[in-house]
Image (tube, one colour):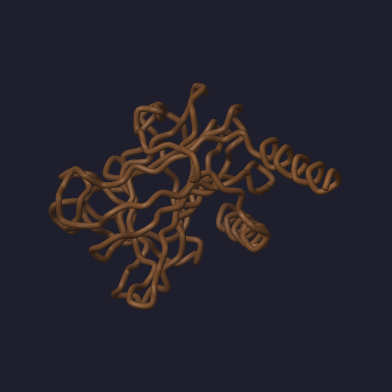
Amino acid sequence: MKRSALLLCCLILGLGSAWASIGSINPSDFQDPVNWCTNYGCTGAQFGSPQNWTSDGARTGMVGLVSSQNFENRVQGSSWNGNFTTGMGLIYNGVSSLGNNPGGILLSFNSPVYGAGAYIQADWYGAFTGTVALYDSSFNLLGSYSHDGVSDGTAGTALFLGAYDAVPDVSYAVFDTSADGYHDDDFAIGTLRIQTTGQVSVPEPGTLLLVGPSLLGLAGVLRRRMSRKEVL
């Protein structure tokens, strides 16, 4: 019994020290916005993965799909009828005219940051679960944060989903939504917001998770794909 208790204690301490990050659904926890309309226009055009972006605070990075396929720039209220704020520029991963195979939306940061978050909505109406996973510069998985949301047509009510660490070690973030037997994994993210200053907050219980080994393999694939795109 004592041995079991000791093993359990070590496991808890190991998990607690593995990732100091905090999940958040509060956009005020993230300071520097990346406006997709400012970067790519509000025309609903398609773009190859990845593309460069610049934040309002002059930070830079890239955005693309995990699948390396094209993404589309949409706008709430014209080319997107969802629950983002009206006029917000979006990155949409399911370009149906190309028969796109939807995948997660990958963000890279040219200089490491504390964390990032974005408004997110599944393409179908109904309940969904959004996830953001954070990686360091070597594509070591730092952890992920998941939260339930509702996709509908009520503008201005989109879920904001973010996570940040105690130190500025985040070089990549991947956003995704859950799929089920009735829907593809297609979704959009709105304005990205970057955590630039670091702060202390209390995580929501039951929502911070370490990501399993299966995503560690995916991290390596993503890093190689982004590296090839950057060389091109």
